[in-house]
Length: 287
Length: 307
Image (cartoon, rainbow over all chains, first blue to last red; front, side):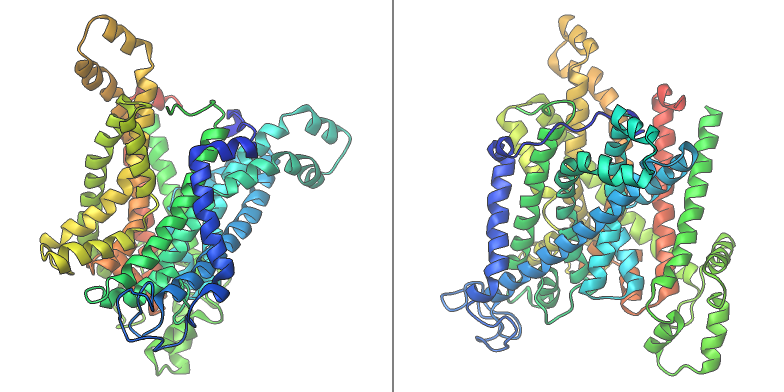
């Protein structure tokens, strides 16, 4: 059990930015975020307009990434797709983190027997891959961007609850919590006012690790037709609609896929660096 | 040992029951009336049909009662009938199970065959260029969406080079999906192998073995790899669970006639009993494999049994 787990080491931003993988990830991520924010102004064409160019025309000066099966400009669609992918990722991580943290805090302050049961339930759900959880949930909620976001958020809860529980259990054993308890402070108030601020920084850092999985799940769900619905551009859904044309127009396959890879890679690089820096056992044994 | 086995099996049984119960509850997530939503897909349904199905699925009862009815039915081997075609769900899913198992085993085998050597190379060359290269490949591996890798493989190996058929379910067809699943999950195996081996290489008995003048190869293969394999066995369960998650999408990319492909069709057609059946079968498989590996772990390492 994580009761005895060491708390993560403190995370410091300046040191982090000197870490090679965090720095590389941050640069890639900055480009993707900028693209998402500036998309409507930077995009050379209306991403929804059919016949912006000839159908399935290869990448060239007029259309940097080529055009799709309806003659829409792929570069504009991939740019705007960044908004959907990052948006779903952000919303899912924030919602999942909020719910997971609340759940983890409550578990940490439960009576021993109930705590054992709740942890067991969290572990059971956690043993299923989050893609599968999100898939199962969206199957019943119905397809669509909002439902996919909700499903991904819920699929992240077990991970965040587990992490929060580990951090909160360590705090709970400290004298200041005991003092508050003796003073008669209500448990919910201790959780909110005393424990949460102390673990918040670690939580935000660990929260970022959920991003890569959220974005992969979002792309996967959209690819299967269960997430963002066409004609809205999203990397997974662009791939889904282009998959029948991959023989004639491989560029429809290449660019949205690269966009997903780079974004997920940036989060993985950052997450890996964070894990490296905050590992309680000191720097992970890497060169 | 016997109490260890009994306790693990009991936990597994309870876990499966809980998951089946949750699968039963899931139908209440459907916005509006699930029966109407399901029947909307198949068109002309009379009020009598709706009433009959509502009663059949226990949707006129409280949530917990309805979910318990579902659990009871599943325990008797009854997963309900599909909305489309009114076929029994259990034989439909079980008929596809061999294809799904074949792909999962091939994918897992590929992941281990690629991941373990990568992890060993990284651990032995810790801190050197080879280590860095392997870890970089590993992080790239977990960043590539499986369905994109699959589509790229189809584009290159099937359409361009013509080495493999584009889609279908046969011995020749298994190569590309198994490679896709294997490559994506080898990254996880490589990481686990590397960290397990690095811990072991720091142990005193390894130093003793080296001091006795054994060749490095012997130290690695005989003294380090055997205990490392024990740690690897435990992560195989984790990798398998993740692999099944990825498999649903991979089966769809390659039109592989497994449970995952059927499940996505069912999801798009709102065939809820079929989706519930898919959840029950996949969850049960994950629990069974994890439990089997836990037992194996207990067999290999007596210390585990006492926990």
